[in-house]
Length: 132
Image 1 (cartoon, one colour):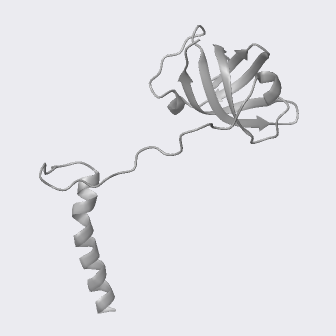
Image 2 (cartoon, helix red, strand yellow):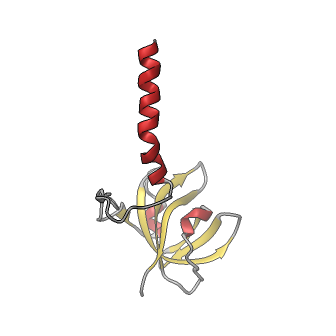
Image 3 (cartoon, one colour):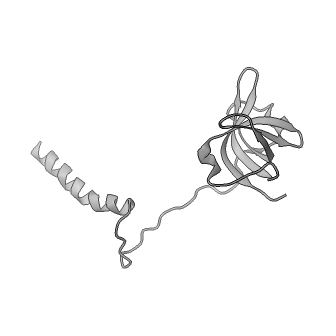
């Protein structure tokens, strides 16, 4: 039991500088830098679909849609339009990532189809402005 407690105390003391470095504080310019992986998969994210196609997809299908957000219809609910029609989309506040988007802006939405008995909407996981 004493060995376990001593080992735990030593581990805690040794990991404190590592935790301090991750949360801020002094950074030694002469210290070797650890390579941190940034990003992840780069490529198509789900099926590119129109509103009309998305309405026929299965629940929880990942999809990418391009068009315009026309108006806000609730706290996190918006009306999205493309050339084939309109669809309700849910965009959490954190998904905007500081972007300001107006109805004139073309956007690309990536997310999951959320189907209920009588409605279909897109639960947006990423939003970005696109040209044209």
